[in-house]
Amino acid sequence: MSDLAHITVVGRVTKDAELRDVNGTSVLKARLASKPYGCDESMFFDVDLWGKRGEALAQYLLKGQQVVVLGGLKVREYEHNGEKRYSLDIRAEDIVLVGGKAERGAGDEAPAESGGDDDMDF
Image (cartoon, rainbow, N blue to C red):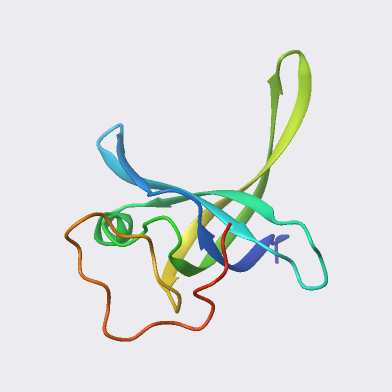
């Protein structure tokens, strides 16, 4: 068996997700914030979900929406203003919508039922 880096993260979308086309394949790009148990500071993850599942979820991944992301973890190294930085990226196998409300634009109706942690802001 080969090595495996698998992760499950529960968190909130930090801004509306974007659906892009990469060489003829759809990819959903989102940013997720999550507070690990026992920590005061949030961790941030860049999430990619490829294909039809990403297309189907694009309209629902709005800022504030609570989700569960399952996928592989990748550490990406990049340079910003001459300084080396690192980013935790997740190549999602699936994203599941869970409780909590997303921010809504003018004219959108709020759901009849609200989730548990509505007062959490990221």
